[in-house]
Image 1 (tube, helix red, strand yellow):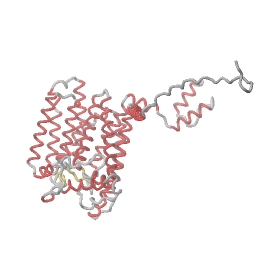
Image 2 (cartoon, rainbow, N blue to C red; image 1 turned 180 degrees about the vertical axis):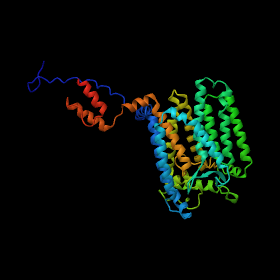
Image 3 (cartoon, one colour; image 1 turned 90 degrees about the vertical axis):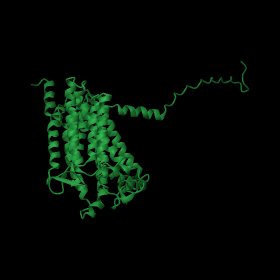
Image 4 (cartoon, helix red, strand yellow; image 1 turned 45 degrees about the horizontal axis):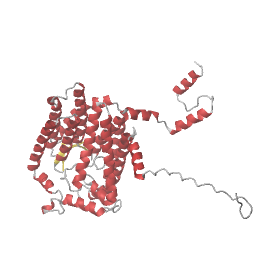
Length: 454
């Protein structure tokens, strides 16, 4: 081999190896979708969505009630925090009811169905007794319970219909009777129509619509045939049309759908100013407490139209956040109803989800001008203790049902407090040091038996 000019052998360069093929990068959107899908499929997803979503809606509702009700309270010569304090008291009582309902076994919920139905019917009858019933805004649906506190029994009628209807359908399904149309309808539909009649005696069309939605939700979950479902729906629509046609007030509300002008005699004043409040909020709102419409322009700013004040003060971001929380709550309720093998849990969870979702849709649709103003509050959000208490008990029902799922129960049983895990690790590193003070008596006994002591 010839040498180089310097007399050294030429340096042989190593041949270049082909570059290894890089693994293809995952699509970030697909990765995010896969992670979100895994998170949704976890056993405790429904449990956390119901608990967290309901608490967030309630807390945000307290803030907005305080902001929206100050001017109304001052106009009535009351302290600015008057309505907030009453709502906060109702939320505290409702929190206790939620906790109790979430810890009650399913059989105890079923045992409460008939007493709650009987109590609701009795209170609805008392509403129509002169001297006991109280009329508010032309509707006699209230009972004075002393001082400034009033009770609306029809709100508890929703919860009673859900529990009683779920228990009735579950018993008939166990006996294989739901294949016959007469067992599907009787006595569920007659009892529901009795409750509707008692409510309509007071003129509360909005609550009657929610009760009708619960009835159809139960029939749908029970697998009612299309002809049967359509027949009951046609009867309900006919009765509703007659009730609306014979009432000038309800016809005026129907005429205000999509209105952009108050019209003659300002009959669409509330609907139009609700749109004004939402339009002036913009993307992020005018700021908490800075609403203009609540200064006497928007009636019922802290009750039926609190969503409009939320849009004005918190903007599109605030209203979309509230809608997202309700959507998550509805999804979790559907998931609980769809994954259970217990017929009572399926009917009750579906009934509660139908109740809360339908009421939220009707309230928000009225504020947006897409539906007639029905006079129903936004669940967990609007002012009103009579509506808040049964709704929070119903949320406790959903939490109890979510905990009863076998996978969720196993996941909750595996979870221990961080303090306990830390102490267990310390005990394991100590070797045969024996049980510590923080152990329970059962663990001490098991440790003593394992070491040969008796």
